Length: 233
Image 1 (cartoon, helix red, strand yellow):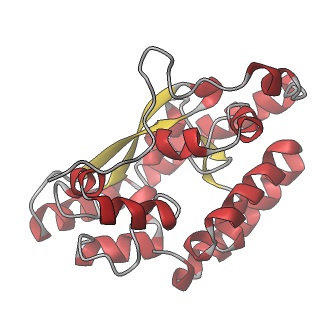
Image 2 (tube, rainbow, N blue to C red; image 1 turned 90 degrees about the vertical axis):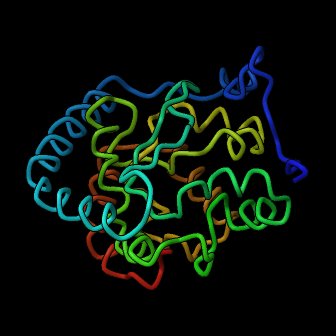
């Protein structure tokens, strides 16, 4: 099979490198705000992991008995200051789907057009995986990423390197200012029903004026957004 043509980044220069001038032009994020975010992240992620342990075990058991493959799925994402990390999710796809998408030109084109996500009706998503995506329970293991300091509770969507590299230098400079989040403006504004252009604009809106008040407002609106399962896939 002919490999798909998609953006790649030379390992020597690093995909997460951003335009230096663009980064310098961004105002610094205040110490008080950074401290608030990290304190919130540690408390929420620790309490969340402890309280959701029974749910973790139930979901893990269902995945393990309903389809072949590991319970968890990890994928490289770009984080604070352009550093890469492995985001952890419950597996929602058939084993090996990630490799299929990258090697099949048609599948990769559809994946990019959908904002670097599989479409709602993609047959590679398992039956239980479809439900996990609708409820966002597939993202529950990301609490581990939050506790580890790789993500925050509130932030922008964690981007895969190809999606990050495809953005404009000014957008990349904004993105690396803060850790990506479990929830954010994209979550409360429409989730998967948003177009890629909408998601980029929401990321810009959030990153240009981050604040404690804004983060608290997003947190308060997240439960209602999660209940609107028709917006997710």
